[in-house]
Length: 194
Image (cartoon, rainbow, N blue to C red; front, side, top):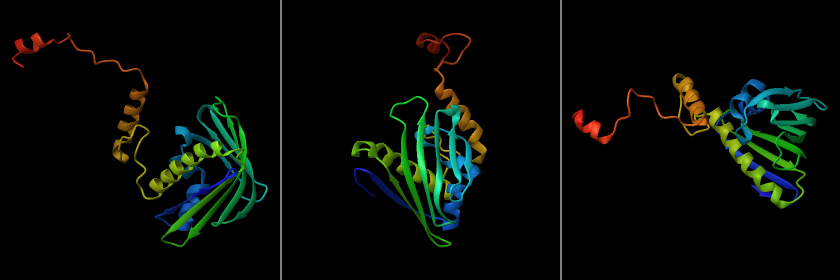
């Protein structure tokens, strides 16, 4: 990983084919399964992969929208496009960047290299660096079938996903103790032989 005051470059080796990495990055249904920047769920994708084509990512509750236009497209190898962030609840100002995504490798191994350009200063680079590191790990986990860690760090498999979702929803609500027939005290436990 290298960066300067205006650019950030980050890369990751992936345990999949180059084509699988490209498809996971570009196909809306795959992208929705693994990419969750700032914990936000991707709700809608427009991805017209051609020079001048629109790219738009809309996240749940319109809390984040990223849009842009493809400037250069080399199928399965390179995507260059504008990368404009629009945050609904703004903690940092909206920003316009340029993104270059390189896909390398063969039928058994791949690598992805991302360069994000257009930062105003070094301090703006760090949150994006962390975001890309998390995103590329999410991509790797998805591609290797290891994408079963929920936002609360709970492990899951296909059979347990509904249970995990229910636990995540409960964790988001205010905790309420279970209702019982009476409140047990230490004395009541002793009387009951416990």
